[in-house]
Length: 204
View 1 (cartoon, rainbow, N blue to C red):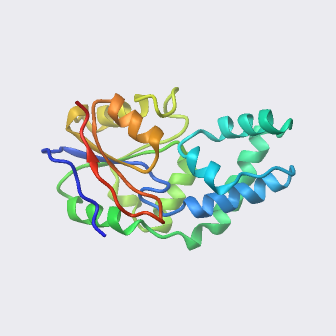
View 2 (tube, rainbow, N blue to C red):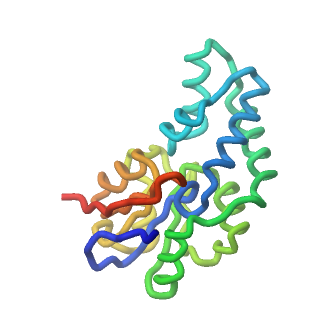
C-alpha cells in the first residue's frame, strides 16, 4: 500500500513518532499493560488507541479517576518506559512512511514532533537507524500545551525556519491531525496497522 500525499509544494516534513515513523504502538500497549498490572489496572486495546497522543500523566490521571486508584504518575511512567525499552528491539518502521522518508531525505528538512519523551523518541529512531535523518526533535517537555494544541508543530516549524503553511505533517492520531490543522499545516493520516489506507487533508 502507498501513502498518498495532499497536493502542495512543501518545504518540510514533520512526523509524529510512535505509530507514524515507528510501528511501535503494539509494543507501547504491551508496556502499558504490564506497568499498569502492577497496580491491578488494565488499559484495553481499543481505549489505548482512542487515547493515542495523550500525555502519560493524563492517561494515568484518567485511569485513577475511572477506577478509584491512586497510581503514582512518575512511577507508572518510569516503569512503562523501562518496559518499552526492553521491547524496543522488536520495533519496525511503518513501511509507507519510511518510503517517503527515503524519497525526500536530502531534499527537504525533517522534524519529529512527539508527545513522548526525548529519551523514548531517540531510542526508537536509533533502533530503526533513522535518527540522523531528522534535523529537529520536538518532544515532551519542549512545549507547554500537548496536542491537539498546535504549539508543538509551530515550534518545529520555527526551529526549521519554514512557514507553517509550507509544512506537511504525518500523523496517526486524531489529536495529532487536529494539532496540525490548528497550526495551518497540511497533513496525511497514517492508519493503524490493521487498516493501512489513508487520504491527505489540507486545512482550509
